[in-house]
Image 1: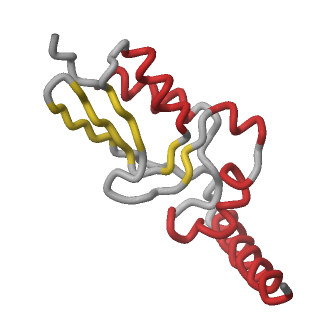
Image 2 (image 1 turned 120 degrees about the vertical axis):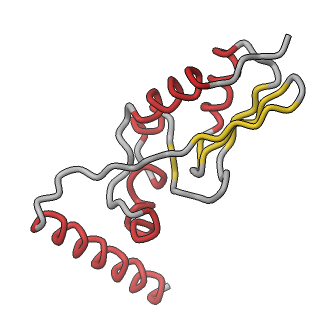
Length: 134
């Protein structure tokens, strides 16, 4: 148990050092680019991003596109961190805040995405979705 606590303290210290470095460099905001991929097969479409997305994304997109065979998922060509939906931001927790203490070095950002990022991604996916084959 003590080793686990020491590991957490080390990760926290390294995250704080990164925050200090960014502040000294006057970095106030970090941007994250998300690639969206579509694969149309027959009457269906598989769409994905390289994030761990919440299931609400898929449910929302399928319902709003009125496309029974539209599937949306994560881990497409990699993993760029958690991508929570807006309701999760209100809850906070590991996916929103604490995971960045551990994984910031892999995702190249020290803070979570903004709350409105979920809406922006959903709108983008819907606007660029291929047309359904009737």
